[in-house]
Image 1 (cartoon, helix red, strand yellow):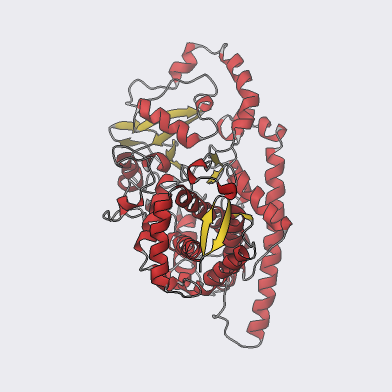
Image 2 (cartoon, rainbow, N blue to C red):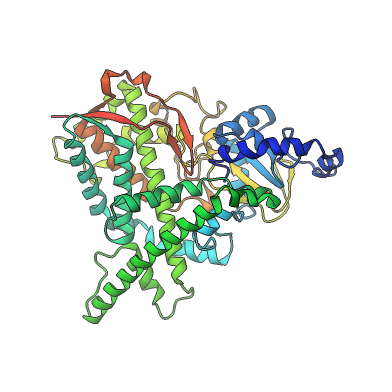
Length: 504
């Protein structure tokens, strides 16, 4: 994870540069084995390697390096070699041809602390444990049947959000904040059975997702791990982990008490189960092949918040931003949804399949504004030959999905927002087309694509169906600031404030 670390680096880079004056040429040459055909590498400094070239927007910095040095480059972050793939061909080699070799994760301090020693699906290393927990997620938590069973939650929370906008009475609203509350409420009800509102819980989630995107110096320069302690990063991470653990313990106890009451009355409780209920049922199965310890359940729930809340709300926010900037596209999508809805109070999930233009608008949004621009880092488990280059075991691997989505060799006018490009293009985001991998691909691809997309589609369809959205103070859409800020996900730097006028 190389995100949100520019503030920390600004305090230590000067010291590194001074130290580099005392490092000999022997140190530099020792990092390269002349007998191996390594991928091309940009020049690096002693000790910090290429850390100084990453900046506050790593996906853009790495795209720039790729343009100069090639689609597959090897950089050095501190003492850690990192392979960066910036083309569909390179991504296919890593995520398909050699998927098994690159299926593991590097051990990173912050995610490890926050997820009970990387017991979640996202950050756990590849192996039998990961296969077991992912199997439970895919078969029990995120199957098509299970996703469909929570349809009423998505539709109710969408209606609640639409009504909240209606109460604004034409005043300026922070749409990003509203969308974040909406997706958080959906995840809470699906995972935990009810919403958890209040400033304290929202603040905990904000700190949790922020920390997942922070850079830990000690991961890349172990002898400087004291910097993480001095900056307070270690203490903040432990504090959030303890707070979240206390919250999840309360949730588990609440569910266990409810389960005992239901079981004591001899009533089945399949209906109305949330994901914690399902995990507790699996935990008590007598002939289970895999013991679902308490920390594993809590780590799985943490994954849902990390992967489900922030990424979903930001995708919808970017879509609305682009629609406001492109009135002709906004008009086309509104014509489609309003014709299909035909005066209904709300658009339901039954209507979504007919909305072809809505779907390509979301595809184009995910191409331009990939939620996790660098996906999650992988690690090679053995030496491998990749596109003619030698890659050593233990090399971290970054797929720049954001850069791949803007590759001019694959996309016509790649910087332009043009949803029509997908109307006659069968390309999808499910991991088979490596030119377009916003959810990753291969064994470690996102298992929650189906759930995330239906939330995106339902929210976006109802927003443009019920309201005409414009910028305040009669600002033109072209004036909208689209500057990014990088954390765990790719956010807008400035809040998306809009005026929503009801459509009658």
